Length: 157
Image 1: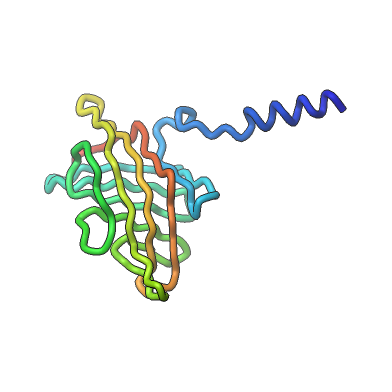
Image 2: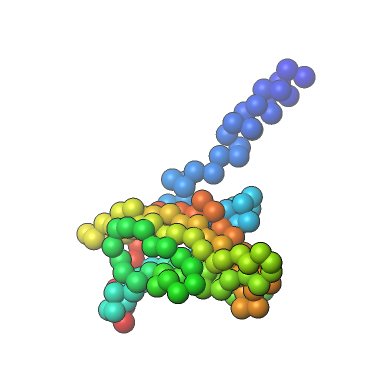
């Protein structure tokens, strides 16, 4: 019994650890607050227009983060904002540009923060969270504790 308790303690301390440093580079977050979502494929492209697009997919859902520039700072999300996040899953696209239509009305919102850009290595890191709705305003998608870490970007068209 004593060995079993040691085993449970070790598994509890180390088995549930989900450190971003073991997923380098990464694009991940908590989907609906309790489900770890991690992109298995990811890209980042800095367009010649200055727009930065980050995208990732886990094979079931796809996140696309579109920012008006690639500079360190905070980018608010919501209806009418230049920065946008969309998440597509099962033929439904959720966007931070959409608001909910239930009473009380819930707003698509959130924030993306670019913490650092390494121009030499063409990598960036930052955080994000968002609340979004489908185009009808009835379906809801939320991500919290979002992270992009050592995500390599390319320059495109």
